[in-house]
Length: 235
Image 1 (cartoon, rainbow, N blue to C red):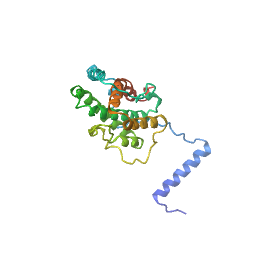
Image 2: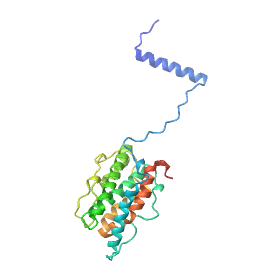
Image 3: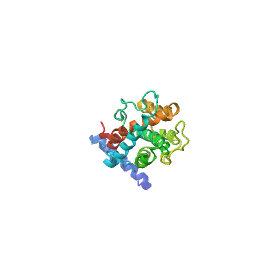
C-alpha cells in the first residue's frame, strides 16, 4: 500500500531513519569545534596601541603648563582618583573598554571645563585627540555587545562640581540603548571602578579633579589605551 505523504513529512522521515541507522552503527556525528567570533564591526582600536610623538608632545605641553600653574595654588586633595594599583589587566577583556570609556568621559568633561582657562589654546589638540579616541571606543563597545554597555548610560551627562559647562557632545552615546535588557552587568572590580568615578564627580572639587585627570593623562594614553587596543593580547 502506498502512503501519500507531504514532501515535508517525507524529509522528516528520511532524517529519522538516517539518525537511527547511524546510532546502531555507532557512527554518531561529532559536532565541530566552535569557531572564534569575528571582531565586532566598527571596532577599530588597534590603531591606538601607540600615539605619535607629536600627539604625546601636545599632552606633555599641557601637563607641564598645568604643573607650573599648580605651584601657584594651595590645594588639599584627598585620596587618588586613579590609584596606581588599578590595572585594566585585572578586568575581563570585554570589561576593559567599558572602564576606559568611563575614564575617558570624565577626562574629557574635566578638560573641556578648562578650555576657558589659561591652558585653553594648549588644550585644543589634546581635546581633539581624546574626542577621536572616545568616539572610536564608543563604537567598538556598542558594536561588540550592546547589552554589556548599560553602564555607559550613566556617563551620558557627566557633570563636574563648580563647572557651568555642558557635557561635551562626544560624551553622548546614542548607540547605547537607554535600558538594555541583556548581557552581564558590571560587578567586582569594574563595578567598584565605575562607582568610584561617579562618586568622585560629586565629592571632589574642580581643582582636585583637574589635578587627578592631568596627572593620569600619560597612564591613560600609554597604558590603559594600549591595553584595550591590544585586546586579549594584554595580559
